[in-house]
Image (cartoon, rainbow over all chains, first blue to last red; front, side, top):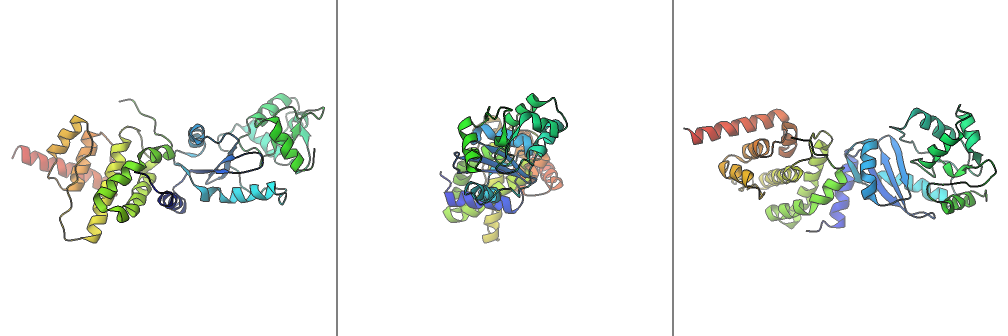
Length: 185
Length: 153
């Protein structure tokens, strides 16, 4: 027996309203393709270019707890800020972030990354220096590669010392698109 | 018994929502089944982060649904007899327990079947019955005492 979309949505909204969801997720459309966005009670926890929820459910549960539910309402605020960013009407995000479970080094690098402004780029080495680990450019690269909140934590603004784009977990095309949007390329 | 991983709630919900809705429609009709459906999964969600084992999740959520249906039925027809609530599971051991407990008051019957047929914790049973853990324990023990008196008067 099929559960109607209306009944399904009412249950999901009620679960959010009663604060019974550890992490709510939904797909957000964007110029770099659909994004799977996960938001917990602590803030934005995940943005993924791979939108198959089946793969992501266990990951979400490890981050926030097993009460993981597709819940558009929990994602609405992130959706609104992402829309504004992609329309060129937002240069910084006002979202709180959920970085639970990440190693200290990763968190310190991501906090520095968050300070790289819209429309600017930096290098892996320079980011490593600012995070207090001047010789850790490679490790910084791997933190960028595993960044679980791309776009909002702008790892697309980190490039090689020569200015080459070098790499991006979502593919170099997406990195170029984001930098073009910000007027860098 | 080895612990079975408890799936993220979304997976649990997708797996059981059709059967829960079918069960509730059978008991309450199309219209009233909708509110009961929402209440069933909200009750499950309230208890979900404290579950300790992933076995028998189907029996668990169907029991919640049956109890939500009983509550809904009582609300609308307070003076009627509560409808019979068979345990809808094909496994013979549970069927036997279901037959044995036939005739117990619904809450006691559900508590006994979930505790001794499915080996669920009192926390899970409490969530299924919409009651406290103490009340669940009480219902199971009263049910067992009643059965003993019936078998060995």
